[in-house]
Length: 630
Image 1 (cartoon, rainbow, N blue to C red):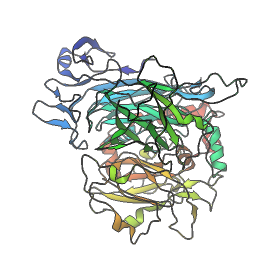
Image 2 (image 1 turned 45 degrees about the vertical axis):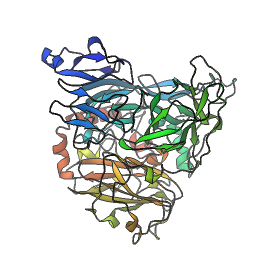
Image 3 (image 1 turned 90 degrees about the vertical axis):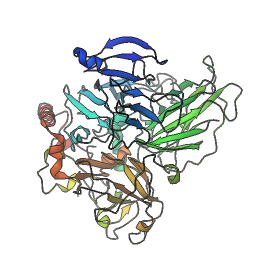
Image 4 (image 1 turned 90 degrees about the horizontal axis):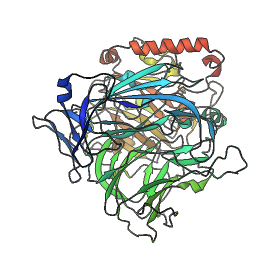
């Protein structure tokens, strides 16, 4: 099945040199001539062949290799650039339409067969979904899995006035039943790169994940770009089966290998019928002196990475969807769910004789490791297309303790000054940990509210917006504020003497529907009386995933300007499935009006319930559900 169509446009594409190529009409119907003439491609570069950005007639590109901080200019003189506040200013793009299908397949990305992998359009990672700042993105998702529903979450996408498109079963929709299709539609208000993945239980560690790219300006100049790359841990058994290891806990499953954009190595016995090859290394060729924009995503289930390229300094220019003041480093800490854009100049600080250099994705100390540590060298940079030799380069010295990138380095280009909280911070301070005091659905589980999340797939929160009370298992927190900022403090140390938890863990915390400001991030225990005095309100780091340090705390602030039901959860897949999550109910009375129709959401629920009734031996939620649902 083809993935990509422009449903409403026909336009002329630029080649990489900026000259005209052929006029292409892409899509199921021919638009009127007026529509064709009103669209002008303005962006000559591309991450995939044949792709160009398209804006209304009279708009002009201001983006080139020596001016990456500018993007496009409107006829009235308005300039959209790195200093534009993308929460209030968005150019007028076009519509990008994609078709993806989720199915089951035996794959062996590291040379070892995984019979129950779940793939997107037959591949892992899934195909690149690509758009431009201001575009409307439409993705038709069809589920062909034999015994699972599915959803797709668009990680980090703001989903302003489109909460029903966030893709979380039990929260914003029911699962898509086998043989059914759900259409996601949302606007690219932000720019940068991210990923899309299933939020149905543990599907994404089994393969339901792919890169997402929204072209826009960059805070430093570059010559060539890579499509986004996914760094992942990989398990050979079904993640659904391995979840039992987490429930038996407290340890989480150990990864079999590490993959760099779907390529890796696993050392196995050739007599093992599942040992089907030697795997492969990710390879790219550098041209000396060129500057390369490289977009990195940690799409792991449980592995925090330290990323480096031997003998090459990296210039970091974005954190998640937030452009930042550029800074240099030789090793980059990347927590699960986080993304960074880096620019690497093809000028090694210490050249090797063969012109080959290792890319390293090292498992950090807070991760549960990997069976085969030879996987830490996962890619190769070559200066000679014809070379096949393994690099002889050596790693930089770096530490592998789990941490976010240095707080002082993550300076957003578009500044925020965080005002006083509209909420009572004490009431929104939560202890994150493994509840060792009580079983929940048969096991000790991770939680935030002293109550692990547990969702009914058939009854999503978004279809209950008239509720005045909520099932405690849904972990709904009311944030009914209409201005300014609200604060939230998450602690990995004990707050409640009568309710002790095991808290010795580091958690990558992800908030849907928002970027948040990091007011404080500390490895010491939170002190409600004194810690708030250390909060930073003057343009603090801003992103959508940040680490909660083991035995420490994370204080965040966000604007309550996006009506919806928004998930906040640990992005360690095993912890999220255990129940380490809550729902933020933001401006409840405005959610339905901001969305419009929920007819497609209701239809998907009807399809899901019909499938359940027809397949009681395949999946019976009352008997078979063993995780939170997310």
